[in-house]
Length: 178
Image (cartoon, rainbow, N blue to C red; front, top):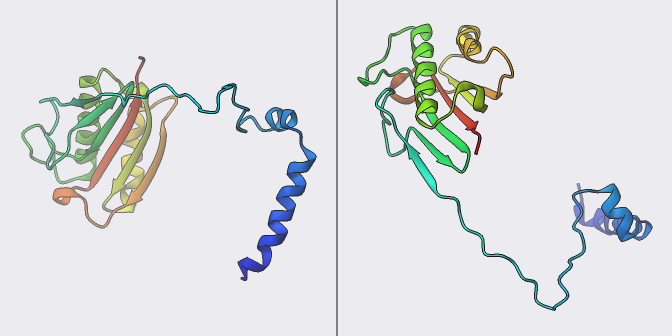
């Protein structure tokens, strides 16, 4: 593939399309197009922006973070729940089976969400990491009990190794009312 050979024709096509549209048509047909600035001076003015404060979320009713991270972080009305594994608050696995660990993971997520003022209904995205993809159906059934309607977006992947030899890890993002 010889990209330099195609660049002149791509540039010519772009100029031809631009010439066909007026600024008004561009705004009407492409809502993402940049609108003309209303600033009349030669220097554009912008309001100073401030980063939103982040709030660290922590609860004793879920397993403590097993490393240099927090159980969750809340920024504005968004809650980012760190990956939870099947550890109890006593920092022991709930059991050796995928069912026991998944139930504990979901319990941990619920406790962390509650500490942030959220519920499973507020979850918009999750990521499930499985040590063995053959456990997908079992994990899916337990996970689905927490999201009977309006399930969040989700990705499920198989991970070669999860922390402390866990069988499943799930993280979540929730959006709460401001």
